[in-house]
Length: 196
Image 1 (cartoon, rainbow, N blue to C red):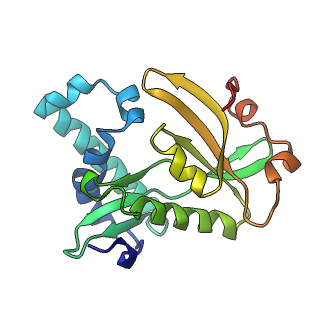
Image 2 (cartoon, rainbow, N blue to C red; image 1 turned 180 degrees about the horizontal axis):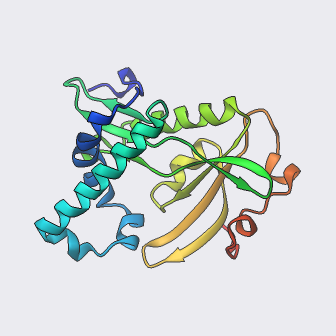
């Protein structure tokens, strides 16, 4: 598989189950944010795992129904989804609109092939079109990727799974916008800034 030939494409409601079962659920189980947020013992019980998956599928179907033009997925040559991301979530930080990305998921077998970067590039292009800041909450594993795309760490929360970093990317073409607007992400989210 050549990752350079794969492009983000739209998502439809019937895609939700395969996106959860084939991409997101396998991808998130190894992530530090997931390990920090959920009791991993729950995943050892098939019935509870299926309840979590069913709940997530239902929520994703509803989200796609509302925002289907804004989700993106990448499929392999057989047409199976192997990566996807959610639509930019708009929120206000100290009177400045930012677009937040809740998740980018790549199936473990396809990680480190540029698919996550491709989805993030799409997200950055969308935020640049509207001169918006881009915001992500990054696990330790994700920080290098986000930095390559211009995100800066603006606050850090230490956890048992490593530092969870709030990262902000300035709108394209607006130099030093974070400083120019005087944005304090920690203050904007009501957390203590512990530095990078």
